[in-house]
Amino acid sequence: MRISINTREEVFAAVLLIPCLLFVAVFAFYPVLYSVWLSMHRIILSLPALGRKFIGLGNYVELFKDEIALHSLANTFLFVIISTLFEVLFGLVIALVIHRHFRGRGLVRAAVLVPWAIPTVVSSQMWRFIFNDKYGLVNFLFYGSDVTHYRAWLADPFFAFSAIVIADVWKTSSFAALLILAGLQAIPNELYEAARIDGANAWHQFRRITLPLLRPVLLIALIFRTMDAFRVFDLVFVMTQGGPADSTNVLQFYGYKKMFAEGLMGYGSTISVLVFVITFVVALLYIRVIGSGLMQGKV
Amino acid sequence: MKRLFFYTITIIIVFFSLLPFLWFVGTSLKTEVEVTAIPPVVIPAGSLDFYRSGIEKYNLLHFLTNSLIVSGISTLITLFISVFAGYAIARLRLRFKGVIMGALLTVSMFPQISIAGPVWRLLQSLGWLNSYQGLIFPYVTLTLPLGVWIVASFFRELPEELEDAAKVDGCTHFQILYKIILPLAAPGIFTASILVFIYAWNEFFFALLIMTRQAYQTLPVGIALFQGQYTLPWGEIAAASTVATVPLVLLVFFFQKRIVSGLSAGAVKG
Image 1 (tube, rainbow over the protein chains, first blue to last red):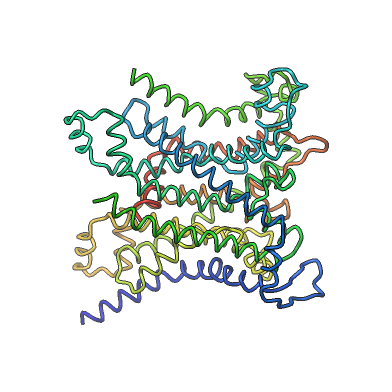
Image 2 (cartoon, chains in turn orange, brown):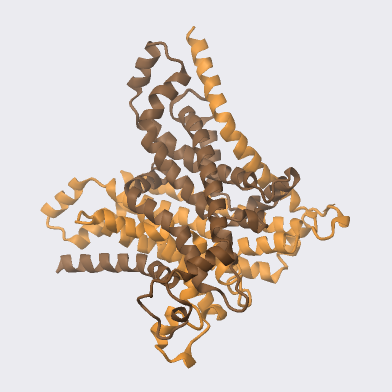
C-alpha cells in the first residue's frame, strides 16, 4: 500500500517535469550537441550545392590558424577579466551602502537597480551617444566647446575597448551588488557587537569579519559575472561592430558573423563549441574553488 | 564625519546609476537643433517631435507591440511550466533530482552562441523564422532555469503541515498543488514573472537571428538597427530607448523588494 502511494507520487512528479525537460532537451541540450556535430563539417549556406562535407577536426585546425579568431579570444579574456574585477569591486561598495539602514534606502536600492533593468541594447546606444565624436557628453566634459579637439573615441582601438568595458561595468555592477548584499545579510549582527565591545574599529570589523565571511559570496558573484561576460554580444554589436581593426571583436560576435553574416555554419559552430567549452571549464573551476571556499569561510 | 562620507558615496552611486540614462531621456525630449547643440542643452524644450517621428517613420509602436506579445506569452508559458516543475522538485519524491537541478543550472550558463546555429536550423525547418512562436520557444527554454529555481525556492519555504493535513483529508497531489500551494506561493510566482519578463523584454541575440523581417522584430532589435538616411537619428533612438525602458524602471521602483529577493533566491540560496 505504502509503496504504491510512493510510486504514484514519483509518477506524478515525472509528469509534472515533462514539459520543462522537453523544452530544455529540444532547445538547449540537443542544439549544443548538434553544434559539436556541425563543427566537424564544411557547410556554406550561400553554396548549398556543396552540401555538408565531413572534415573531422579540420575546422578546429583552421580556428587556431585564424588570426582574427585568436585576437577575439584574447579580447574576450581581457574583457572578462577587467570588467568582472571592476564589477565585483563596485558591487561590494554598492552592497555595503545599500545594506545600511537609512531613510530612503528603498529608493536608493531601486535607483541602483535601474542600470541592471535597462535593456543592454538601450544602454549600448546610450553609451555610444555619450562617446559620440560630434556631440557626445565625454567630448564636452574633456574639451568643452573646443570642437577642433573632439575625438572619435569609438574609432580608437584602446578607447573603443575601454568604452565597452565602462558600459558593461555600469550596467552589471548592481547585479554583483545584489548577490553580495544577500551575503551581507547572512552575517549575524552579534559578531559586530562582540567586535565593538572588544574595541575593534570599523576598518578592523570589515577586514576581520565582513571580508572573510563574504568570500564565498564574492566568488559566486565572480562566477556569475565571468560567465555572463563571456557571452558579451549586444554591446559590441551596437557600439563598435567589433571594430576598429577587430580591437573589440569578441568570440560570440565573431561566431555570429561567421555563421549568420557569412553563412559558414560549420566553421561558426567551431567557435560556438569553443565558447561553450571555455564557459564550462570556468564553471567547473569555480565550483571547485567555491567548494573549498565555503568550507573555510563558513566554519 | 563618518556620516558625511557615507552620504557622499551614496549620492555618487545614485548619481552614476541614473544620470547617463536621464541624459538619454532628456535627449529624446529635445528638438533636432538641441540634440546637436554645443555646448549641450541641459534642460530640453520638452518637445515630443522625436516620439512622433519614431512612431510615424520608424514603426516604434509596431516594435512595442511585438515586444509585448513575445515577452508576455513567454512569461506566461515559462511560469506555467515552472510551477509544475518547481513543485515536483521542491516537494515530491523524485529520482535523479540532483541531475535535473544540475541540468537546469547548466542551461542557465549556456552561452547563446553555443546553441544559435542548431536552434536557427530547427526553426527554419519548422518554418518558424520570423514568427512569434519562433522566438517564444527559445525564450521559454532560456528562462525556465530562472523560473523553476525561484518558484521551487518559494515552495520550499511553505510549511509542510499544510500538505499533510490536506492529504489526510483525501486531497490528491494535483488538488494540493492547485488549491493550497498555488495561492500561498503567489508572491513567489509573481517575483519570478517579473524577472522572466525583464529577461525576455531585453533579449537581443536570438531576436536578431530569428526576426529578420521588420514586421516581427522586437524593440531591442528595432533600436539596434535604427538607421537614418545620412546620420544616425539620435533623437528617435533615444525616444525608442525611453519607451523600451520606462516599463522596466516602473517595475523596479514598484517591486524593488521582490526583485532583490528573487535574484538572490535564484543565485545564492541554490
